[in-house]
Image (cartoon, rainbow, N blue to C red):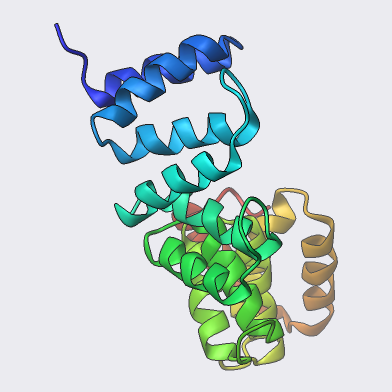
Length: 218
């Protein structure tokens, strides 16, 4: 019986988690040989790390690229990081941004956050608070605590969105509840600004957002 690429990947992941890298390589190689993007990604990761196979960054890049061309978000995200730092490739910040945007558009949460950061800071790209707000919101709605804090700060500062302390509190409450120290400081500052009526509204909205995008904000 011929195993599916998904089954091969599952077997490879199990072997990898058991530190059996040789078996992981065998399974991922078999999956990649079928053309499966995830299999290529996992195999590339082994080449990148030198686990179960001799480290080969060029091979890793080639496999990540093939998986990325198939639209596999984690590979696109890895390529963005590698081009940004010159890891295994010639450093190319603009190419890193291209891959990072593709990863973000394909649904990779960390890439969405990174792209928002780039737009907010104007790093290697024109500063654009509206684009920053868009990508922070996208990542925040996927549950990114870091994005929720940053998106809330945009509301607190009126950058890329209308100034709104109630919205700011509602977003920042989630990472604050999770123990993020900076978010806690930001939330506490908002508590000094909000009127009693606004705070009541903010807490109700925070509870709603927690149900949709995170955990209990209290």
